[in-house]
Length: 151
Image (tube, rainbow, N blue to C red):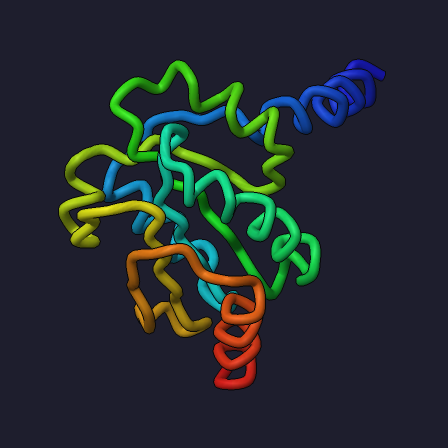
């Protein structure tokens, strides 16, 4: 009975924890990418203060809704220096994918010089695209669909 109550409590708590932004290290990110091998993975580097990022965010929420979880994984990586505004920002935006705070090591390893910046990994885990700038929904869908076909 205790296990059942615990499971029910976790089911109620998990939706609130899903959007909590936490710091992620490069080894943790690499592990997360490895765990999602077999899926198309999109890394979206953004900042709460970035106007184009704010425009792109609803498109990413919609993109996440348009594909099954076992086919597409979107991971948000905030480059904000202060993590305080990130959690309320992603909650208010209705973000439906995990978001982490990316440190200098991660931004350096992906050569992030501006945001937004999107990186796409094929299901085999290889980095296919890493480009700065805001992408339109049609472009995002085309890239995801093409990478899914290549599987």
